[in-house]
Length: 124
Image (cartoon, rainbow, N blue to C red):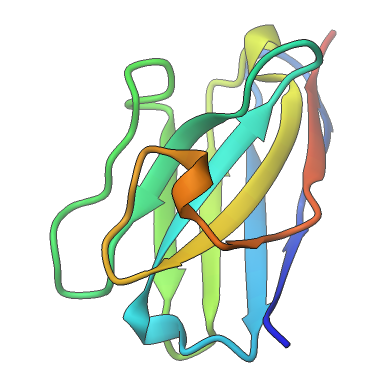
């Protein structure tokens, strides 16, 4: 059974940083693209970053987080991380990691595997 487990969420002040981690089990990790999505109350789930299989193209970020968030993967440890800097109150949401075989997608419906989510709250 494939499992994705996020960790690292919490409360942080505006301008602060957090690093989220996603640990995977029973997933042929090197064959999968990884992504992070977020969902705020009353809003649709949105992509914040994706990274394709190692050795392929560069990571993708939407304009809302570009230059502030960095996604990385460690194929030796089957983990994916999201470093979030210069956090803003509008970054408050539940953050989810997701996995998709082969190439990444911007659409959440294209990802068959999801973690349970971790809450990120940016507030003073």
